[in-house]
Image (cartoon, rainbow, N blue to C red; front, side, top):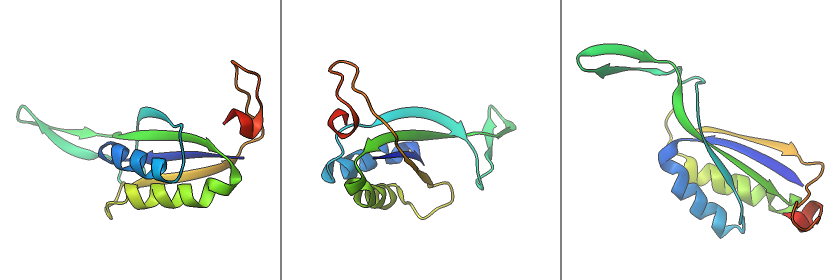
Length: 112
């Protein structure tokens, strides 16, 4: 089993969700987050005053999935989140040791 954490631009969330549904991913955890990478924030103008925004708003997706869906899922996220501009985000892939469904006690792939 694998665990994917993807950081994407907020306005791409629905596109990514649709792409994930197409490859058979039925569950995703979504969080609103802030951060920076090469984008390094930006300057904004508010009521005539200029100020630095150090952290850029992003969306974090967390997905647990069986090994056989990994490549399709990564490709779906990459294709649907891509704008071609700096700040498109990152995809992190981890090995997932164990999953337990609290309600039924099912474990591992049956719990996904």
